[in-house]
Amino acid sequence: MKIAATALLIILAVIACGCTTPAPAAATTPVTPATPDITGTWKGLSAGYDPGVGYTDYGNAMMVMNVSSQQGRIFAGTFVFIGTKGNETIAFSGVIGRDGRTLTIPQKTGGYSFGEITAPGEIELVYVEDGTRYTSSIDTLKKV
Image (cartoon, rainbow, N blue to C red):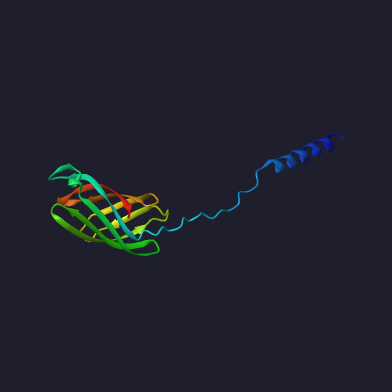
């Protein structure tokens, strides 16, 4: 009788342990955000640091980013800097990150912009250039 009671107790313990373990987690596939269409014209102002000038707003010069083409997450276009010394146009290409928000943009003349789509129709870019012309700036752009 003792053996039967002990065996019954062990069986009940095994059943209880099996009933209280959590079910295995279902395999989930990560959701990839849709790639935004950023083609078009974006305008805004910059603030930065230039070794010859120091901290500057560049005389409130207008910066225009024209994204002329996009294929999936890859895009290309030109930056136009409209200032008191005339206009300067610089070609670029770029990539939208897998998160659908981050941007990486190398420029033809050197330097890189790293950015983020901060809201629909708004982009913030951080530009950096190293070497003897080292500089950095923050560009806040809105879609026109």
